[in-house]
Length: 258
Image 1 (cartoon, rainbow, N blue to C red):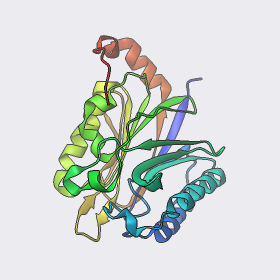
Image 2 (image 1 turned 180 degrees about the vertical axis):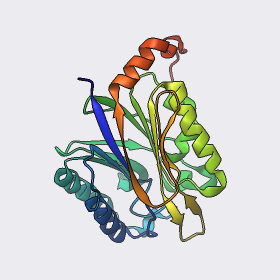
Image 3 (image 1 turned 135 degrees about the vertical axis):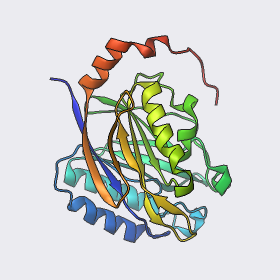
Image 4 (image 1 turned 90 degrees about the horizontal axis):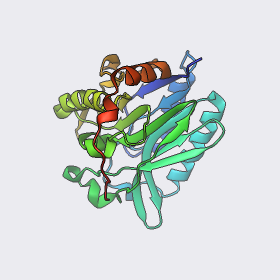
């Protein structure tokens, strides 16, 4: 039997620079989830909002949140992923953690920091792409601004799922919708985007538009309101479509120098 992966996209508003409140609210939302799921996906910087002042957050909050993710993943028997400001070796990172029910932790540091907002000054950029093997699927997690750079996402690893977590604002939401669909089509992979919703403390409005697209770019789910979206991905859909169309066989070979 071909593998399946049920994913839940948590589209939520966030309290500004308040990890304890955000963890509490997200815990309540997850506890109210009435369907079984394999993976719960939270937005970018889900403990703080898109703050360019990580020094306002206690450095210990990163480990507190990571421990919280491990506990919740074990309780719900579902992996949990999302990014947070994380302090390590003298630098802050916009770091995504992927925490499995058995306490296995994978991480990805945002490669393309958002220079327009000053993220490149506040956070150290990552240099390494991450591929996670989970329940028969190979998952490539990326973060927000990474979406604009297709070379970084290029499917050279034969991954099955491309996953973006974001704080993507309303004025540029058409780009979000368009690029998520494009990344699915060009990589012949499921593409998931989880955005926050609501207005932050510096006036940015986030309209949601969390969505899942199949390997041909067909929209499976999309939401513009505060809710949790759940849908199921099928390995057979990936394999059958790739074997029939073979588009990835014709991709360009290249080496990415970072």
